[in-house]
Every structure is written in structure tokens, then in C-alpha cells.
Length: 425
Image (cartoon, rainbow, N blue to C red; front, side, top):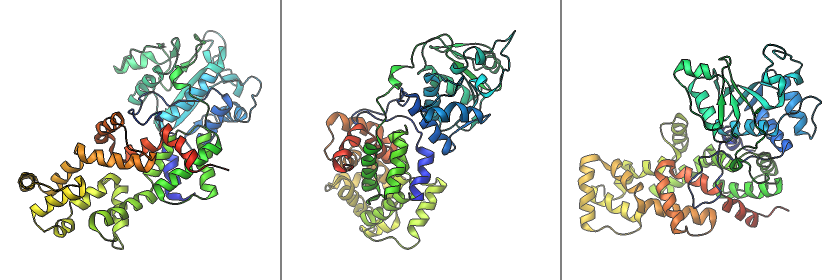
């Protein structure tokens, strides 16, 4: 697998939310997870291999996760499926997770198992979790990351779920009103959650359909390589991505990996040189633009507008304000400008400069609609329906062109179309 794409996969493979339809905005709820303990454990093993999931002590992972991923359960080490689901969902939402306690007797610990404490970690050990670190941030029961975790979990866990550290939050002035979680006092060096008082399943919206097969995922991966990178992936590249998808990695995480890869960015840069400036890039140009993207001073979506705002483009189109404005109408709106329209924008060039005017054209509903229509044709093979077009136009300014591409190519429609375009043998 090419490093430029694979490196981004590690960072994005566990992001949240897969769109079910391209005519709707991205959902705010959690991504779906399997009901199968083995599939969930396999997803955790994949996360562990990428560095996104760790346990302290490591015997939690070795005795409670790995055997389940292989279709086995060690005696006295069973873990409630809801716990496995929560672990996967938290990794999906925050990118990484470290667990400090789960199934305490399984790892040979009897800490607080007797009077007077009778810890829930001993009474119902497979239903209690201690979160130590989420998304690279250590938890103390009350910090901002801790609050985000509990607010997230409150949307997915059943009523009667318990969470500790209530006094930690009260002392810090971060008390929470939670709908499904009952709160109690606990030590302020982690975040405890357990299901001791409820047998109910997680919120049905997070319990999704079965995970895709490697075969179906392979067709999807081949489609992404062709649509983003204009090439056919190697067998190793296809298998690597498809295996991750079959183990529970969300599609939008994979699509984001392509959108934000150096390989795709260089393609976009070269295309911008041709489409906007009408020439091939100079030798150092692409790498300079790529370095600027790495620094965060420019995004992939900014490359075209930067070229339209350049002195080179201005000089190519009359080297005057009127010619410049006329060219924007021709190149971005695909129509000729009237004399009043040209005069209007020339006034604003004199006030705010060419870059500001380019931004107004680029962010206009008319221009955005054209870009979205082109994306629909490329990725879905059809024109957008009116509802879908209006939805995406409204979101475009929030998520940018890269967000639109990722959303369309992680949709169910795109996935289904990939099966016909690139059927796996």
C-alpha cells in the first residue's frame, strides 16, 4: 500500500458516521457497530495494531479481547457485548482509547472485591469499564474530554447505565445532567461506566447491519483508487483497506484517508495548474504547495482559489480588472458577464482586492451547485436530485469540497454502485 495513502488511513480509519443516503446531511449520532462479539473484538484488535486501542495492564487485551476475536472466551473472562460495542464506538468517535480496568478477576486481581467496597468490577466484572485516556487525553472524571465522553455515551447507552466520578465534576464546576446515565462518586483518576442495573441493549440507532464482506469491500476500495487516484490498486493495497472495512472501520474514515493523502493532493495541485493557469507545474511548485498544506497554511480546497487569485492568472486575462472579472464568469459560472456585472465587481476589486472577489464567486450558490453536480456525475454517475443538491449546497461552506467528496464516496449509494463497477471475482 502506498505510504501517502496508508499513513492517512491510520489517522482517519476510526472516524465517525457513515452516511446512509447522499441526499441527507451527515448524521450526528454514533457510527453503527456490530452485534457480534467476535467482529467487535476483531475491530479492537485492528485498533490495537494501529495504536488506537491499548489497555493497562496489557493482560486485559491479551485475555479478554484477543481470544474473543478468535471465536473463543477464556474461563472467567467473558465481557458483555455492550462493553465491546462501547469500546468500538468510543474509538470511532475519539480516535483512540486506553482502558485501565475491565473484568478484574480475569486478570487475577481481587482489588476491593470484598467488604466494605464490593466493587462492581468484581460483582459484575464483565459489565464495568474504567476509561483512562480517550483521544490522547487522560481522564480525571471532570475535564473537558471527560465531559465529551459522557455526553457521547449518554446518547448511545440504555437508561440505567452508571457512571462514576460525580463529585469530581461537581468540585470542578462541571456537573452534568444526563438522560440515560445515573452518576455516583468515585476516585478522580479515570472515568468509570457500568451496566449493572440494566439488561437493555444500546440505542438501536448504533446497532447496525452486518459488517461488509472483504469481497464487497474490495470493490469499494478499487472504486476509490480509480476515482481519487486514477489508478488500479495493487492486490496488497486492496486487501489492506478491505480487511479494515470488514473489521468495522467506517467508510468515511477510509474516504477521508484518500481525500487527505499526499498522492491525491498532488493530483489536485497538478490539475489546478492545468485548469486554472493552463500549464504544467514548474518543478518545485507541487512540493511547495504540498508543504504549505502540511503546515496548515492552505488546504486542498484552497488550491484553485489561490491560482485564480494569482498575479499570473490576472496577467493572462487582460492584466486589468474588467478582463479578470469577465474571466471568472466564463471559467466559474460558464457564461458571459454583462457590462453592469463587470462594473459591479470591478468596484469591489478596487475596495477589497482580487482574492476577495474570487472568494465570493467560489462560495456562491451558483458555483457550488456546479461543483456538486460534477461530483455527483463522477462518483454516483448521475445528476443530483433537487433535495440532495440543496442539502449539499447548504453544507458546502461548512465542510468544504473535500468534505463533500468524502461524504459522497462513503455513502451507501456509492458503495452499492462500486459493486457493479468493479465486481470482485
